[in-house]
Image (cartoon, rainbow, N blue to C red; front, side):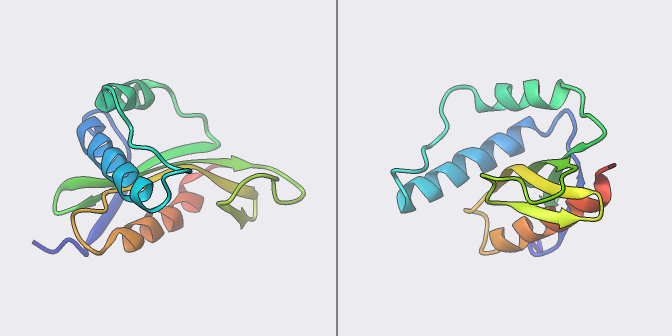
Length: 133
């Protein structure tokens, strides 16, 4: 099983459990490092993702997952903002020919391996080609 091989695809119904596991794990990881800034998600996290994944995606938005060894291990939601300059207040704004891509949510499962940074990179690099301006 090679967890370093990541496949990025559109998020779909059925991804709730993997997204929930990644979100809770990511929350645990970052809350341990920065307890004043992050918390561990609670409640029915899978149901939250079920609601998210059943809402329509507008043309300037995308929701993607990262899969490793057939398991969902990461999620990104992003929006293309047509702007003359970088939108204020965003820490993850990537310039593109159509404006700026804002990563609204980026989650990866930190427990599976040391590949979470690679998964983040794969997800972030896949976004611009999936957005329509």
